[in-house]
Length: 142
Image (cartoon, rainbow, N blue to C red; front, side, top):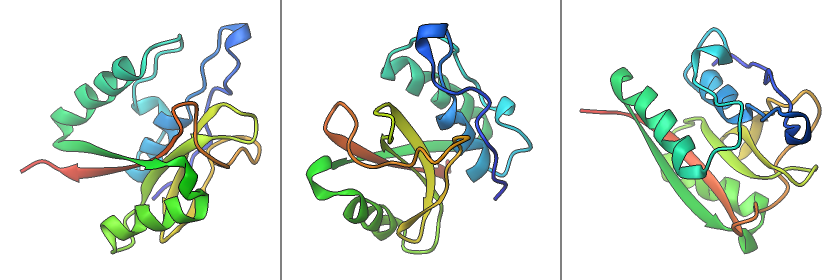
């Protein structure tokens, strides 16, 4: 797995939408750069984001599986739950609220965060605005 730093820090007031999510994908898929993964530098809905990524993954023979975890569980329990589902040291995307209060994605594995793509220690400290934290895996299509 190659660890990359995100190319865009989330700053919508200045017309910049962060790319932590695509950077995590690039890390987990061992790509050479986050630029290999699509990113819309504008405000898009969650559904538009998922469609963008799913349409990029499908021709590569990959499927995204996303599981919401109730924010009341806490970060440690959410990370443990994410590891429980794969049990074999598979890295996954873990997302929720960052220290800055924005939605943020990091790479997790074995019940802990192993890489934060932010230029600073943003981390995931709790649920995002929906009240959930999320774990996300990539699996090969048959």
